[in-house]
Image 1: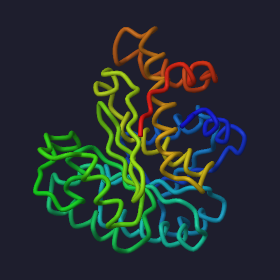
Image 2: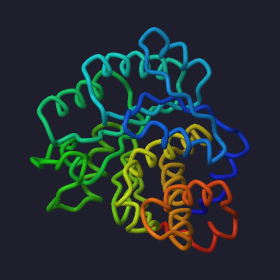
Image 3: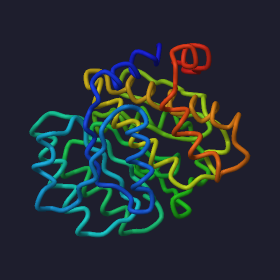
Length: 263
């Protein structure tokens, strides 16, 4: 597949991406969406989340800073998004770390149609029913084939599943993409995982008819920008602003020459 047409779709359509997201990384999630050429909105209040769906193209839910009240707002937003038929992305951030977080993850997944489930290897493995523990919001080792786990969960939940890591896996019931772009520096910067969920929502909002390919293309473009940013960065402090610049300036030649997406 070629990732660049999906980037063109984002820039041409400028989808509105509604977030109920992690308070730690909320600015970064908004900025990464803006850098790609889309429009972020960060509305959490239960009094308005359903109305916000009326102007949005995609909904991104992130469980990073979790409360029971926040889950209630997520349910309202997801129900409104389902009624509108727009894609819903759920970042199961920290699932596998605590009983409460596990319970809330499954409660949300059962309450609404989630089109794309995103997480690291241990988060997704826990959602798929494996007995694994997540270290806070960091992945722990999963002794199983991650492609098989992603495909199993995609079939069980009738959705797209994204496992992020050194090699990203993007699967639905019929296909699996592996995205091998990115740089190790991303693991040293708070928020790159949350930003990945926002990127997935951005590309899904612009290309809702092929969510699996859109998610793979979004991750590919995001991670190519990270590779380019690292060429002019000295560490995590300088890396993030360069990442936003490289996303904004990403060109067809960059994507065509650097993309590493395999079936």
